[in-house]
Image (cartoon, helix red, strand yellow):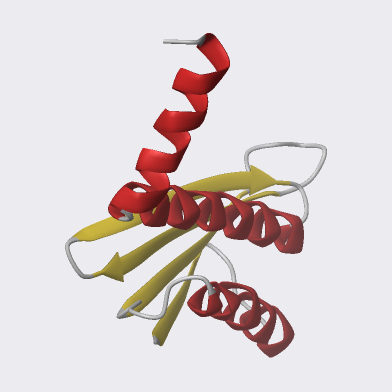
Length: 115
């Protein structure tokens, strides 16, 4: 997987760049066919109490692209939230693409409701 990291409105240090690459790179263990991960880190200086950071991520996978966005006062926390959202999207995508699991879930629902 290729990872492209961009920062808008601030300079990103190497430690944050490595942290983002490591966290988003972990998603490859859930879905092997990720082609490209585009990570955009944005700093919003409008708040007088401190900066607000937003992490926008796009995963290019065959057939469909996945998007996630999250904001926080801490840039690492924003990256963590995006990772969790993308992991959730990947698991939903895999469940939908596996008809056997879908059939098992439908069967459990039918058994539960007695229909």
